[in-house]
Length: 166
Image 1 (spheres, rainbow, N blue to C red):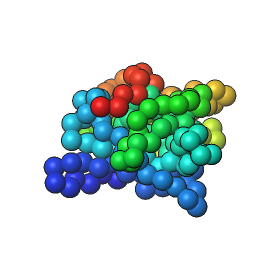
Image 2: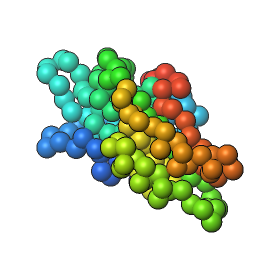
Image 3: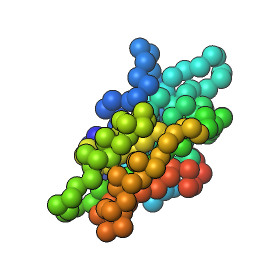
Image 4: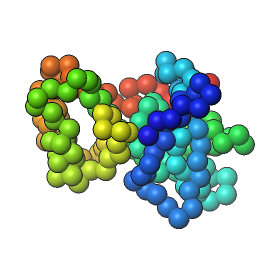
C-alpha cells in the first residue's frame, strides 16, 4: 500500500510474510534509488540484544535487502546498514497499464503458490517474490514471459544494486 502525506510517499507492507507477535518498523529512504520523497516501511524482528533486526517482509523497492537479512536500525527508526545476508533474493515484477487481454497476474500468483514461494503484493500491479537458493523458478518466469517480451510487465532482482543509506 502507498499513501502520500505532506509530499512524502510511504510504501507499507499490509501483510508481511513473517509477521510476528512483536515486530518493529523501520523506514528506508528510497532517494538513493531515484525515488525521491519516498520511504519504504519495513517490518523487523529484534534479535538478541545488539545482534540487529531481521527483515520480516519482502522489500518492494529497497535494493540490497531480502527477507531474513539482518540489519542495524538507527535511533530514529531507519535502517542504517546490513549486518548479514540471509542468502535469499527478491524477484520483483511490475505490471504496466493498460493491461493486455492476456493478463498474467493470476498465472503468476498460481505459479508462485505452486512453487511454494512467499510473496507480497503492493496493490495489484507490483509483486515481490522471496527466492531461496533451492527455489524452482522456471514456472514463475514462464508465467510472465509473454508480458515481459511485450513490455507490459517488467522485472528485476532486488540485489542488482547494493543497499545504500542516505
